[in-house]
Image 1: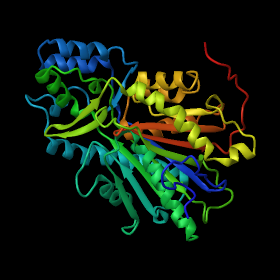
Image 2: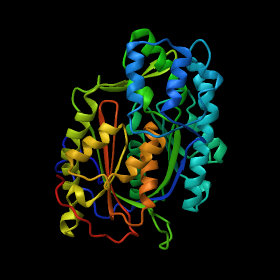
Image 3: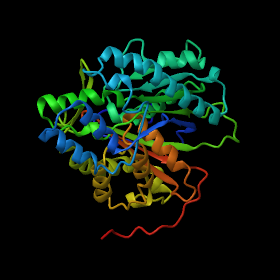
Length: 403
């Protein structure tokens, strides 16, 4: 029986101390273009007349805390400079080219760090919310990488910004299945988003419907990947980046209308209600406590169990999401430093962002030994995971209450 989820509440569920699940490689690929807040204003003024809604959105755009967003093109790209926004068909063509290219690059980085051979990859778990073609983009990525045709593939859909962590959770459960059969699992986990080309679709709705749509101020492009192993057949000398200790998935009740990403003839439309930061912040503490209760090793070994004794890899859904969780969990900006840095430098790249935050955090040699990874997606869904950096000695840091 899997050591993870049992039906109903996870309050009485416990993870084994020796899941032997680890991440052996991480790769992130951002496109080369960086657009500051002024880029959106340039495009908006180029194509749309002055209006109350547009002015409000552009005002918000100046104060998101994002310095640049990584995008596959500048504001002069032909697809966003025609009389009408690009169609979903055109967006699919762009994704097939640019999304697959970014994905292949990210995967190659993760595979190179792992040091294994693509022939050893047993599963591929992928996610995106900015493409829905069939076959999925993962088919073309696997073909380009030379992954064997009978490697088992799973493409997750409908989970938006929580997708990266949900994909790692799915990969972990698949790997545990092979552990039960005493077989090796090497799972390639992939997330890719191309959001920037939907800017005209969002601006069109702002103009025609006079809606204040802040999603247009937040999102960028990225692909990220990791290699997850169940340890079977791994040389003892192999040094993991992270060990997976446990995870939690939940849905916040009656929040379906608060966060979403709806299909539209001109791409997808972001749904982001003002309640999201408050809902997200309020859900983190119960989830964290529930997850910690499912990890007996922390209690048996007298390990840290309070939020301030962990580093946090929080998906940077927006500045108020980060600061809301920071306040709710009595954290400091230092606890969330990787989330703040990625948000400021690249914006929110939806599902691909969380592995980018994890990648940034693992490079911090002065960090804490244990990490809480957390992300929110449509539903509203919550994903949380406890990770350990096995080669990092714990450090002593002040954990006093914030003023």
